[in-house]
Length: 399
Image (tube, rainbow, N blue to C red; front, side):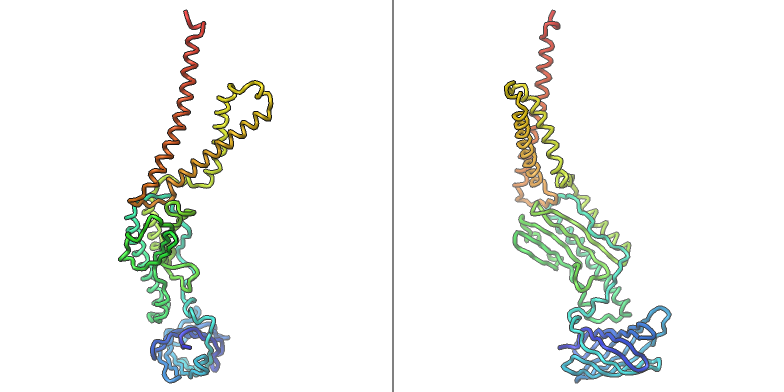
């Protein structure tokens, strides 16, 4: 058991109310926060700095803060005894406002892991969630640039959070509050391998393979014990068609201009590499396929009906069956072509030197599309030429 962590109890004497202590012990030095919810005067908070030795704790109280308009002391002192296996502290307190009394506190086991979770802002000046990253195409080398941009933004976010902690703790943030700041990371999924990196200076492109699936950059994570006052995330999944593709930018901060600047930096980075493929991966594109297939079915029926024997055309069931069969075949072909095009042109494409399969698929897509277009143009042009020849050779035109 250690004294570091959260303690809850009560205070008596000239002031009465609930007491909360957040302590950090480093050797014999102790620091933290002393928070009193007085039943009469309201809440006041002070910083603790002192030492603990042989089961005795002594500390000075400074930097008192209270509710607006509340009169608070400028300094004070506590002395106490640690007992019951370092699970209880009992002692005396006093302040320069000529007030004193006793206090008692027990270790709050539910808050042992994160005594500083409440010492963070809850409302940001600016917050952008899930800013969409549109379709892009970039060479592998551009990953180094995005990591560099993120490293700078994460460094700035950490510096601003440390500044906020200094203001919150009146220039004396406890070491645990600094230690609790999350480290910026790059999380990469390749095949079945998941890698977490925090050494941005030595980011090595040689570690990135063609089986890359996700590339996510975090200066913080949702749900973490501490969400810093400034943060940025760039999240990319489904790279090169590896699963469902999605990409977003999240940014928040107490400085409006900083948050907007970071968002615009990453937005501009992806905008310069943007390609017009979003429509291809839009779910509505799949819904349009039956309509296109229906048009093609009518076009084919226009050519097939003249060659169908009259004996078959007299039966509506047979005609309907032929039309339905043609529709299903054409719909299947269009869906297959759409799937092939989506694999050939992924929403988020990172180009590797050995990425030959993409080019092969693209050649196949263009071959199919070109063949279909030429067939349509050829049939229409052929019909037009035949009609013209028949018109010229008709009896009324020959003299």
